[in-house]
Amino acid sequence: MIEYADTDHFSHRIAGLGFSEKVAVLLIYLLVASLGAMAVLIQRVENTSLTIGIWVVVVITFSILGKVLSRATYKK
Image (cartoon, rainbow, N blue to C red; front, side, top):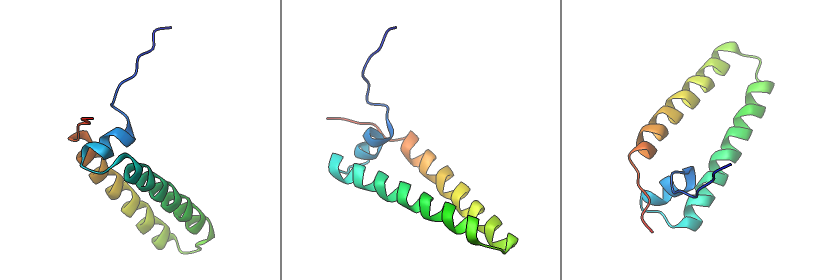
């Protein structure tokens, strides 16, 4: 197997936006914690409209995040 290290990872792209590596990792932790909280919320919500609304927010957020991070480059 051929392996190589590159800088095309999520944390590197966040750092490429101008954040330090430490802040980039903290942002990832925050994102993961938010998604976990949303998963728990979706499981506990009885209202279908609210569940759909939460999913719409998640999809839009990830779409915007994907566009922003696709333009970021990491320079160390």
